[in-house]
Length: 108
Image (cartoon, rainbow, N blue to C red; front, side, top):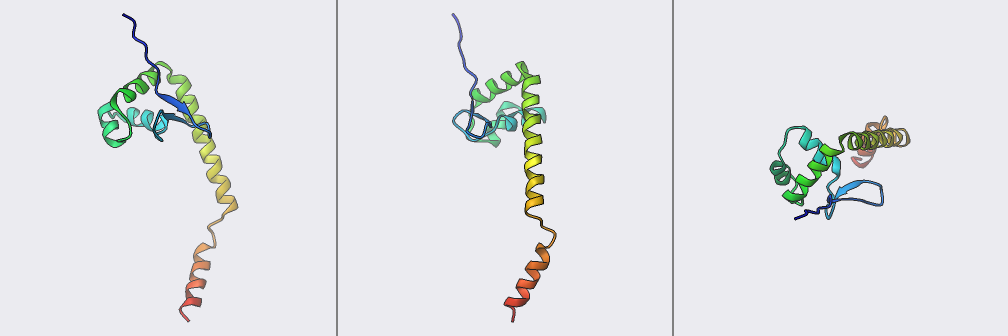
């Protein structure tokens, strides 16, 4: 008897790897697993996941750890770059002053 299974992962239009049929990223399951959570605990925390998919994802991670860790590291760098760019474009330095000035104007 031969067992055939597929890893329940899919890539969306933003190149995020998600658990198939959900909006849960691969990184979410990997981070939870690396924090010591069991597959059952991960499913309890993310109710859109099913247990067999979580076990398959963990197995995929363990078999491809270097590649997955590299992917997650690159995604984290991209997210940091986006946050830094947004901070530059939408500076919050003067927000409190603007809000206080607006409040004083509306209190009149």
